[in-house]
Length: 376
Image 1 (cartoon, rainbow, N blue to C red):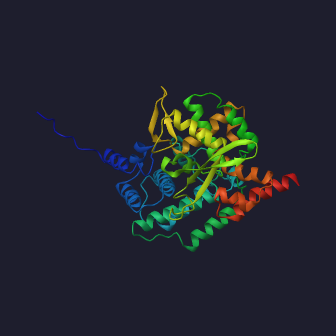
Image 2: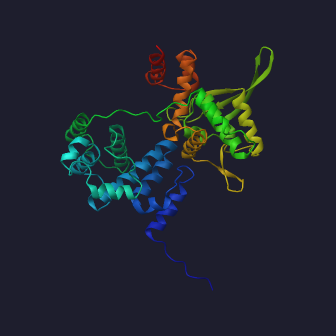
Image 3: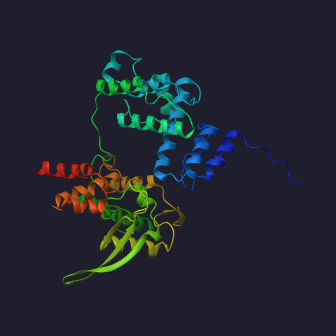
């Protein structure tokens, strides 16, 4: 006799619904999200997936929505109301943009201690001090976006909110930090690659990741993690005087952070990065699907792509193995390192941008200006 089917709890049901969008929106904290997010939150995310929104945008929206729900519960004891009243938006600004010096004389200034401790225990707060203004603005923008997707209007454009943000930033100026404290330039890359000297699968994979990410113009970690065999095209070898021809490969980027995928953005690999990539794919027997995959405890290669965060973890682990301070490097250091190295070698900025695919000359030129100012 068949056992009667037990009904799922609301949390279990949301966890299953989150599973249905995991292929498009990789979720590492599914069970935690299922507890924090409401039914309406999950339905909004499913709707955004069906609308074809980019993976990175979805990840940012999910991350910010989860933080907002956790903060709302900690600060008010209730889930976020939709639409959020102006008073709640002002409270969010007050909790996240505050003056550390003022806090020394007024303990009630900024985020209350119990709210801070609650978020810290859940892993939502790690650093000490106020949030970066850019982070606060991004979370408010995503809060506004999610409100609009629910067919509601919010108070995000209110003069009081804009004034509060402006005054809070002016009262507590802070240095804008780079995503990676140090750039992974050629000398640093050589040290990282020296830790990948064996023919083990892990060394072959990590070596290919580092070389491909750097040589392809400093690709973003999401682009490397999501790279598929179908994006690779073998190009005619490059002739070099008095040496064997160098293997060449084209990477068709598809949809990225700054492109919608309609234009065929292409970057090229030549020589050693191609050899490193081929060595990994042959050893791992990868002929289709995801190029860079997880490796199990017993050396089994997963069928699924590695997570973008794994690119960061790999770089930090290799930095530690190389005797470097892993806290000074992140995956974005490969992107800034490519342009910094190009500047150090005297390669013209437009030529470097052709490979890095930067859309902003101002952003790309900052690496060139810094390199020139330091040496000049």
